[in-house]
Amino acid sequence: MRYGRIPEEVIEAVLKRHDIVDVIGRHVHLSKQGHYMKGLCPFHSEKSPSFTVTPEKQIYRCFGCNVGGNLIRFVMEIEGLSFSEAITKLAEEADIPITWEEASEEQNEQQQEKAALLKAYDFAAKLYHYILGNTEQGKVAKGYLASRGISDKLIDTFQIGYAPAMWDTLVQQLVKREFDLTLMEKGGLISAKHEGTGYVDKFRERIMFPICDATGKVIAFGGRSMGDAQPKYLNSPESTLFNKSRTMYNLHLARPNMRKLQQAVLFEGYVDVIKAWEAGISNGVATMGTALTKEHAALLNRNADQIVVCYDGDNAGQSAAFKSIPILEETGSRVTVAMLPDGKDPDDYVKQYGFDRFVREIIEPAVPSMKYKLLYIRKNFKLHEDGDRLRYLQSAVKLISELHSPMEREHYLKQLASEFPDSSYEAMKLDLHEILLQSEKNRPDGDNKPILWNNVMNNGRTAERTRKKTPSLLPAYHNAERLILAVMMHDRDVCGHVEEQLGDQFNVEAHAVLAAYLYAYYAQNAEPDASRYIAMLQDEQLESLASSIVMMGAGHGMNEQVIDDYIRQIRKVPMQEEIERKKEERVRAEREGDHLRAAQIAVEIIALEKRLKST
Image (cartoon, rainbow, N blue to C red; front, side):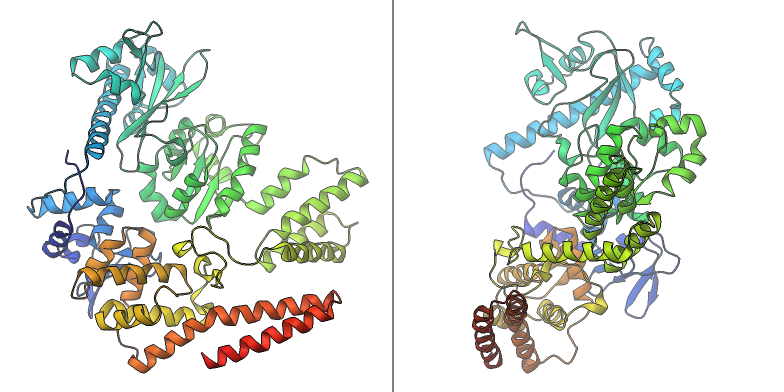
């Protein structure tokens, strides 16, 4: 194990010694087309090749699923490695010695502890797996797993094991191998005796499910009791390796399939994931009994566009599914919910009806999140009673109002009206418009979002930075920013001019970030180099965006006059948006009969328009 940071010169040597076509060619069949190489994308299913490699710039880009970056990013994604692991792998392949920058004493100690714990968890997983399959103690546990429909093949795939009933099976083995028991307790593998002397195993008489990080390293365990012992499931405590809010069971195996299908199936527990794997669902993950967090949702969204929530069919499971929807949708994921009947869990359904029916009747027909929410809330009302039926309709209309798409709102409103013909569609529509109007009035001015570039709040910049739009609807300033960035990536002098004239005043947040990295890149490097610049970013979304902009080239009839025109256009956007806001404010004031306020706003608009013309 090596410690510290990888120096820039090592990263640069890796990029120089490897050709991106050779690296990607190990995984993708590439054909030459002009200046580019093309092939079928390894990250999603496609019949026509949209995956493009540009040898000249040493970058790749898929125009189907929008992934992109340099060869380091490709190795990270295709093999599930961290940045430093990908660099190490590529350096070793090219016989490049890796000299690491000196880490601080505190960093060194933390990294050594982490390395020791990873080694111990790996050993413990192998020990428990061996005990399950090769000892007398493991026979009962293996029989129990067989009764649950978990085959030897599944046991090996998921490295399932067994912790025997003895108090110190693992402790003795750790002592033999000279592991620091104090650290092992800190890492959650063993526990200190209550009397204060010595240690005992954390897990005893339990089926053991190794929990891995995204690269497949064991970082924790989930232990399931076979009898009446409580709790039924026991997870390792949180440690330097394991954070429940950021870890998902089976992500390391599911991620390639999630990315290929652009779909993830979210379960509640380990056994559900394992049984679903047997049914051919290789994109299933679980939250290990803990509530879904924003970190979980972001992790899923980075790997798939659609999330199918498949929680238990009992009240607790359905309540958890309902609560998970807004958390998942906040990241931009499309959410559907699998409907399990009669309070069954996925394992029960598979045992009773088989794998094929589970996929065909539960996973594939999963309902859109809004349909599920409407079905979920209606059980709280007695629909045969007029008062309760009215309250349900009011609650349903309020839920529908939360949809962003007018077409979707119209669709569900019509469904609701057809289901309750004694209620007027027009009346529901009026209620919907009233809710939307009130929501607009209550919306605070300004973006006030903590994630924006430099934590800018309410300074007149557009919230466009974080809003996704289809290319055909992109405003002119958005394209202007992309074109300027494309030239900056190819021309140091243009970058210096833009830094002086525009700085970080880009209206799209991601563009402002890319520009800041470009300023820093040219401060350290004399010549443009797309691959080296992208290596600085170390962020999947930024690298993908940068690779798409680099591929635009540096042409487009750009000269100094055109660039200055674009800069002026970009600078005008905050003022244009301020004028639009003022106009809306004036209309509201007129509607409310506040004519003095409306007149004041009109004067402000005239002043702003004069400033805009002189910009």
